[in-house]
Image (cartoon, rainbow, N blue to C red; front, side, top):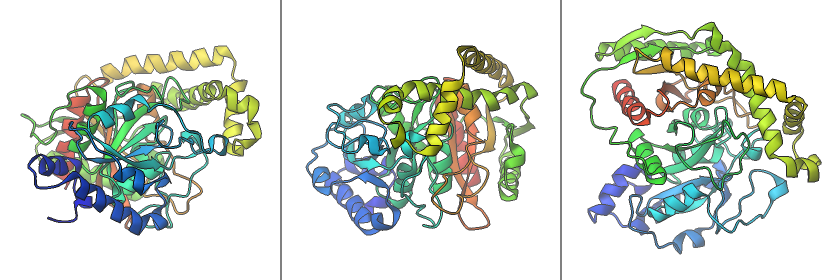
Length: 420
């Protein structure tokens, strides 16, 4: 057997069920990978090998599978610090619901993964496993880097704008942002009530379906089963296509051509101009709701909030109720309109990010190709698709209909297989 730390979760569960892999051997392989590479990657906000070794996992759908938990999700046995010095050393009494369900299904928590400050602005120390001089993306920085590095085959992420899809694309792994509300959010450090969504990262689409299904009580099927027909695909650069680099647009064109040759029907599907209102509505809603959520931090620890985040929160507080109501109404209208926009296509094909991971660790990249879909509450999956000019991973994003997550995951695997 090859190094167990390189197995997908689906491969590992099959081997464990067959008695060909012991959960403790998988755990030790991941711990060895962490010991070797964590000093360079710094994916963890908290990691205790002794605590990991003390776990006796339940015999569930995730029996013995190591996972990473983004540090905006509470854990009863490890600190939850939310990427902020305000919460340094804070120890919750209970797991977040999704973490509790993961443990109930047999998952082994390897540690808390680095997040940007409150999953929004200031980055942590995590570097991209493919090139330590580049960001892994954010805000789910440690989760994406940890999956890519083999620290764990599964990880939780969260997304308010682009915090699952973008880092997964930058690190060359699969990221899945479910339809809004699919995975329960109790025990999450909430910022934007209308936008925050818990999702997952893995090395395969099937792994994402396995993990998300286990913690949400949904049956997402087996995306590896070939669909009975070829899809009708809408190619959609989104409202910010001009911001994508040359390699990304070439990737989108090439992917469409290859999928067409594989039997799919390809149609160009630019968004109507009415969707441009989301460019202003999303950040207004995100900042206003985040400011409301951070009442305690703003009133008791205002100066401990980074300058960039504090500026955004103050801008959010400055919005009157009428402006917020207008933004919410615009988003609801576009959510309703999107259903009609998708009537004659199975899914949209769109970039996951403007390009490769940016140089440096001070910025986690632009969520311009993600925020719209987050606001629409629809499921999105990014699959690795080649590399850019610097040799760093690129991803292609599959966008589905609200609530149609099972089909979206199936089509994501179709795309992944056709482009591999």
